[in-house]
Every structure is written in structure tokens, then in C-alpha cells.
Image (cartoon, rainbow, N blue to C red; front, side, top):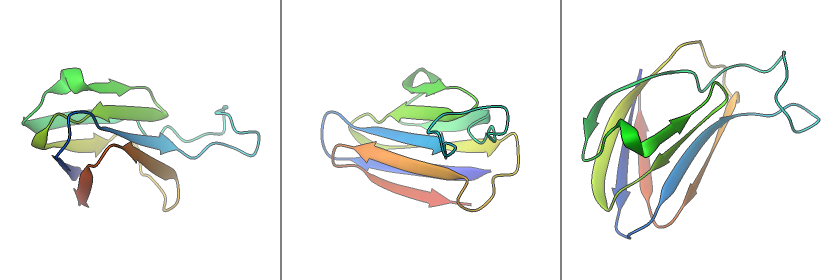
Length: 95
């Protein structure tokens, strides 16, 4: 389980965690389902702010501070995921 804490001083910000795509830039049967799992302990937001598939989850960060816990359904290897963000958010990830 990891805790994700977001500090968003603006009105619009997004955070995306994504499984690294294969050499053809797609997901296939060999791709790890590293975004699969569950979310809990929401503070300052709720599960309606998350869109999820087995390969990607995305979070709409509301203004202010918010956080949640993500429990992965599988073991994620180092370098197995990548993240992106928009807006002025600061993201703190703690195991």
C-alpha cells in the first residue's frame, strides 16, 4: 500500500499512474496490470475523482490538499510504471 498526498494551489490538476507500454507503445498480453488495485482512506476527495483500468489510473486533484491510499493488486517492479501530472500540484508518495 502507498499513500498519495496532493497539494493543488490551482483550480485544475490531474495525476496519472500508468504501466510502461511495450516497444510498440501499446499494452498486450505480456503487459503487467500495475494499475489494478483498490483505493481507500480518502481525505479531501472521494473515489469519484478516479478513473481506473488495469493499466492506468488517473486522479482529478481538487484545489487544496487531498490524499488516499492505493493498494496494488500485484507486485509492481521498479520501472514498471510511469507518472504524469498537469497543473501546479505537488505529489508526495509514501510507502
